[in-house]
Amino acid sequence: MKFGYSLTASMIALLVLLVGRNPAAAQSPTVDGQLDAEFYGAPLAVQDTPTAFGNATNGHRRFAVQGSELDAAYARVSDGYLYLFIAGNLETAGQGLTWSVGNLNKLDLFVDAIPGGQNSLRGDNANVDGGALGSMGHLDPANDGLKFDAGFEADFYLTFCNRTEVVPYFDPPQVEAWRGYLYYATLPAGGGGAARTLGIAQDPTHTGFVTTFTFTNGVRLGFDNSNVGGVWGTGDPNETNTSLAAGVTTGLELALPIDLFAAADGALNETIRIAAFVNDANHRYVSNQVLGPMGQSSGGYGNLGDPRLFNFAETYSPGDQFFAVANPYPSARALLEPEAGLGDEATFRWLGSVGHTYALQVATNLVGPQVWSNAVSGTLATGPVVRAVATNAAPVGFYRTVRLD
Ligand SMILES: [Ca+2]
Ligand SMILES: [Ca+2]
Ligand SMILES: [Ca+2]
Ligand SMILES: [Ca+2]
Image (tube, rainbow, N blue to C red; front, top):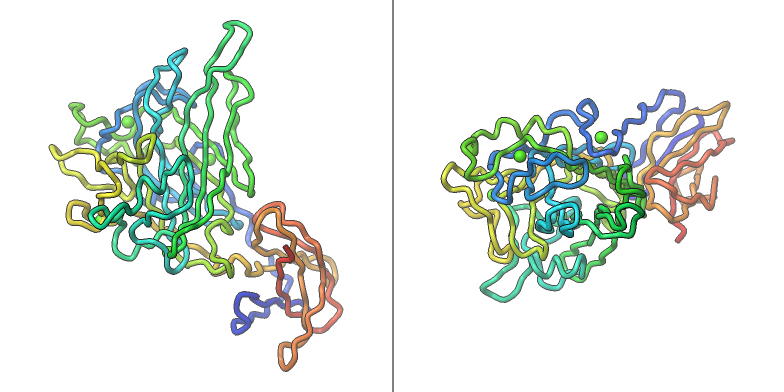
């Protein structure tokens, strides 16, 4: 009964928990591009509009020929990650050797996870993926920049695309090798922001396909581009039938450390909202594949066009063009429930930023001058959940974490 813990983000909110209960079992999906239905539960958004960016019918694990669609979105925050599953397929830009040249379509994701942010995209955001945000952002008084639904203020941006490269081989002498690109940027209310390449996915051979790609910052990616179901293409005799969208179980799956979506002080909203759509190679021509969906009626199916002119809050865009996922972590700096060990030993766990070093500190009294001493120092975060084992000799211990670098 000696262990307690405190929330470092706010010394007002102090909790004391007894060690000895069983912590919740770790829950995570296999990040492979195939839906873990039991883990994710019901979709948070389902497509209701046939794709005007082409309906892929070739069914290859990596290469989707001449079509992109977003059929459904699933997400869950667990074990320090935002797990995101976008069911559908994304057109692969081939080189014409094995696969048709095709268009380099891009999946754009905007995340509203902290207070503030950008309801319409500024024109001075970070340079990511060849000026993606500039292509969608404020240009002049007549071109305000992509505008989201009322209340949606984007704080972070992710974009993914896939293409091939011609590489030397034995027989034949050249092959087309698949590549997947994942980029990230912050969208502070005042502009500027920072951009990162989270990773470039490459299969080691052109015949075998990696289940899970592990990137920097603890990010993981799985991709199965083989969907041939879901929504139909516009102009198809079946175009009004979107009943298959909820049945698609393949697509893009991401494990994203929650710290990527936290404010500088670690704060996170209790609900994380995400807007997703397919864009063209230069992020200058948005398709009608949006989640939440556009609700386009039969005969009115069409792409959205120049994002700088588009407004998701207008009457031509009814409903919410975002989906929402509950976030159990009020702060990326908060301690999680400790795991009991032998005697007075326990494993303390907290959410951290991969690659940074932390100290676990303890105080025996929170009244009057607080004296914090290091229980464990120099713990490197190798994943979003950081662990340190400590033994407490005092009757009551209050714990906090401090990032050291
Ligand atoms: Ca999976
Ligand atoms: Ca926000
Ligand atoms: Ca389809
Ligand atoms: Ca709307």
